[in-house]
Length: 339
Image 1 (cartoon, one colour):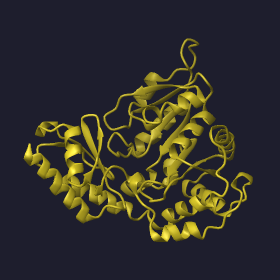
Image 2 (cartoon, one colour):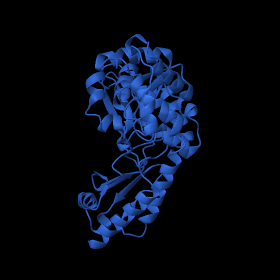
Image 3 (cartoon, one colour):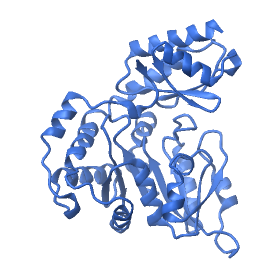
């Protein structure tokens, strides 16, 4: 099976497994796990933050960041397809007691003017907008990268209204590779940034949240409220460190493979996104095939994709080769030709 379902379907390499097996560990609840501490220092250095906190999942990073930066009853502005609002089971609302103010965009990157139009704070009849949540890259807008100038302008607009800013940076390093803009510049104008290790970096789990020492201390309090410490978390932190040290350069290959996939599907009658990073979204309805039908037929042909409404999503990652992409193109063309 050629697995284009998600870059979360990467598998740890032999080298990563060795690093996990040999990891020096301790009690992370007491701050005594040396491998976890080393990872947190590495992430803080990468992001240019005072501190970082290793957590079990990216969704947990979103929840504790929202909770640490808001009060119950506050509003969080985000894009209308943001992961924190639509794809985490309502977790931020349940944990932090917030509501969301979504902005509709084409590419996941709203403008300062759009943000200004929805900010509230002085009217007692409306929730106070205390947080602006960004996503980099933006998953369900097509793996898109914020233009850095707009990103910084939106952060500045939030500041003018007294709101904090957080970035769901699950695929931040994809954005770094695609844009050439360093991770610490993306982090500089926000209060909280996190990165995920279980996607393009190939680890079996884990994410890390960076910010000021005070923010990380408050996030740690929320970590205990929603799940607690992972004890000898160095086993998992070792995989994350391995991914940071060995797999970042491979993200460019993933992006090239996404472009190869899109180019192979040109002139087939489908509507395609132009892949900004490692995702290709395909709307097959112009070619007379439903998304569900395409996904099912591709599964029978040995290619796994995900269905998202009227589109299917194909995600390239370190487990997908150029040959896999070419075979996937052939399979998709075959399904479309059969209709």
